[in-house]
Length: 358
Picture 1 (cartoon, helix red, strand yellow):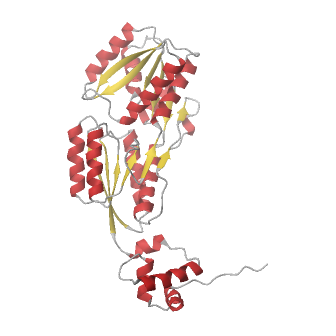
Picture 2 (cartoon, rainbow, N blue to C red):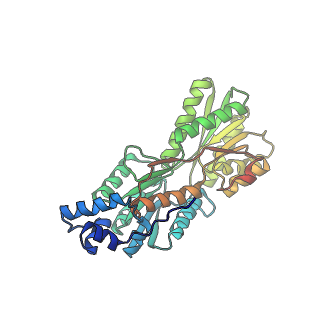
Picture 3 (cartoon, rainbow, N blue to C red):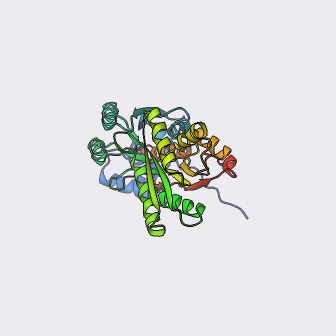
């Protein structure tokens, strides 16, 4: 059986078939102006006849344009969830090294609304081509920021926390409600079906958690517990960011006064703070079954030594990489993208932690 190989169609060939100039075909293919309706129809007819598929990659390269992407993300420590997100974003930039790409990260204090406002105004002044937005808490601030992006026709993506009321190019992150429900089910199963009491550890700043994602995880958790274990008492332990001694005092009081509580959960990546306290300050305290989020270094150490029982993982590096790739494909290559990308809700234990790859 012989396979027919079609010869490569050149712009010159399309121009001859359509009876127009090469320049006219070039303007049509690249969506430029100054093309008459009649010429446009002639060129489009030929393109339809030859089943022309545009080479977006080559077209974007041909412009020789510099594409400046900006990201606004929370401040973080070196070995943290957001450090891995950043690593993924930078990996995404490097994957498109054929293009001229500029990339800058603006960092804000997740517990300080004014910090986010200050940074997003600096970002806007830098005139980015597209923007990737990390999680914040306040609806008003996000509404103002998105309105300014829309005014300037700057496309944007959400990373980690979704805001379905807006119109991003794409979103990458977990379904926070489902994630909270999942965690509640795991804790219920670990307790034998009916935990009487459990700790809920929170890291607060200015009287609140750092992002909506944590808020909605807690919402999903409480919904599940209300439906399946309505008599379970949730003992909140509020730990205040930037006050290490205060954290120790609060945890000491909580564990001392609630020795019957055998289960605990945290909806951020700081469960290792609880583990470290118990190991150093209260080593004789009975084991508390703990569930936390994110396979960051300190949490992994805790799960390996048995002081943490469960971690819910969400591939932060892949989130960063895939979010940048979707934004590049949509904004530079003009390829249509799916808007919502919910990442898997994965449970890690001592037995499978060595096989988790971000």
